[in-house]
Length: 247
Image (cartoon, one colour):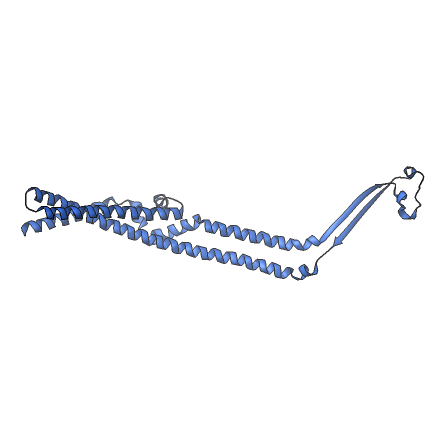
């Protein structure tokens, strides 16, 4: 009974010492990261600034605005100025009722002729529907703006979900680190007891199996945490440590 109590005490001391060491070595940027009131708004702003979906929406709005300008200017496509300049022996063609010299047209006097005109051609259907076409384009612009707002909301929700997953992954990692530290202490104690003949091989085998399982679980938790961290960095377009440190 005394040996069991001593073993439990050693395990608890190991866990407590590990928890203190882990808290002391936790970097400042990581402490800020897991303060949701501080970090979440920063991450959301960075994600919005990096979102290709919003760039696409902005480009769509610019295209819609340019199309509206084209529609407004289309009204003037029915107006046209015409001009011409002609030079030659116009009386050979019966210009101004003069008879044509059929014997030698090149003896006729040379003349220059200028003309200037203004044409208007406005299809009635297009003229009557101009207001509706412009209104339709205004609605298209409003639709693009509404789509952008929806995209912003989706990005905020995505970042919040990713942040909560990151927090959970961090908590799981810390728990697995504590479990592994406990398994290390238990394994070291069991090895001493096994060498001194205090425990049988089956007990030592169970301790070894528990040590292996906790080591594998710790590695899986590390990978899960790093994956969540990398996914967040991919969303915000910058390393989290750099983003947090400059704020």
